[in-house]
Length: 190
Image (cartoon, rainbow, N blue to C red; front, side, top):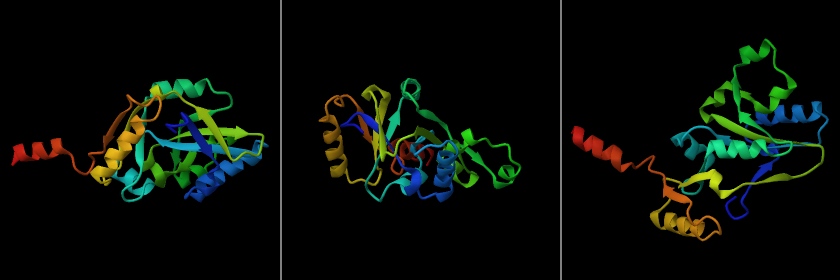
């Protein structure tokens, strides 16, 4: 993403939540499309859940976007849909009232913790991915996995800073599981 300065939307068929990918395939069929590609983001600040579910023990980064800049950029893209996912209970889904246009942005209520924001590209061609160019100024910061060893964090930070255009991107290690300020406050209380 940083090297190529682009977002990459992929086929949802490989997603863990098969209900989710099924709705996107229904949308593709009903709209007479060849493929619907997507990228999943989160509207939430980092959480323990996100690190544990979406990364392995010591790898992974969280890229925080400037939402206003990213949405303005996506609005200017041809044929790109984007927005927050709506989480639905089965009881509500049984009652109907859901339109075909809603399917790319629906998910079961059990996944609410994700607070997903989705970028979708409906395609009339059979393609494997869709690249969307982005400006580096849409990125506010890169947060490195809190379990990453410090030496690993240093290498990641240096690597990012060596990417053309990323010299000023804020890079930090997540303090989610080891926050110095949280500890100082505890010390004051004790």
